[in-house]
Length: 333
Image 1 (cartoon, rainbow, N blue to C red):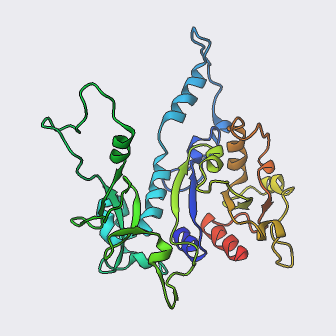
Image 2: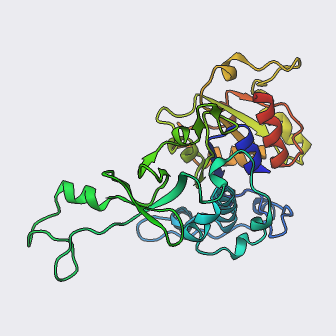
Image 3: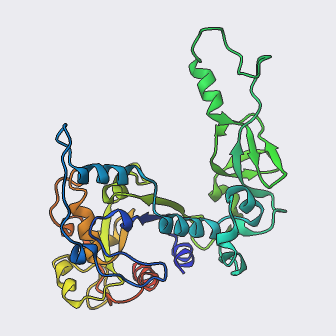
């Protein structure tokens, strides 16, 4: 549902915030049932300081920050990426397809031309390493005792080979592209092209949204990284909160000071209507607020999450996140 809504309304990016890294937030078990917050039932802990004056709790927080994303985040990111990956690339991009066995049985998302069979002139591919000149010992040729030149480093970071299937590798015609990236290739001219050029015909655009050809997926371990690692060089121009999964009625009043993005007549606020890069944040307010408090350094010492948002959607807060995504994107449309 999330992937379909994102494609239908032309969302360019999906950011998954790792709530598991938020201290004191409500945990969720494997069955999806909400568990009582650790901060309520947890007994006081003994804090021990070492010779350097660093507490055991701060060491645990630092270790947690250095760890990778939670399994739940990785699973969701994999699913979202899987839905927009052509079948001829899935075995290449996903090393373990067992967790995705049920996703494979679902129908393809309509509106994405590159999900069609691999007989098209334009194909999606993954850039892979080519053959660089090598010495007799198997290493890259270079002068003994010398450092690699800037040109050599650029060659190693780029390639002219694109894998467009399990056994199919295409050599580009006088063109080098960064390694390990997904690209769109014109198999006739043997050039990397933009999706807009590939999936647009003389009769019109072959996609539901002319400015978007799928979405990117990333995981943010801290709330500040949602903004600092944006795909847009200038960042987001408007940020709105969309409540969901909110089952505690009293917490709804905490975000009411944020201006509604849509008035009672259904008119969208001008600030949101004129913005080019809108960020919508979904989830429980307690999790969002706690995440902001835990990341004050990157968020300019904000004490409350209300200072981040330019507006909010006044929709039923107890609904599922999937439903909130569909409702909010439909209202923006």
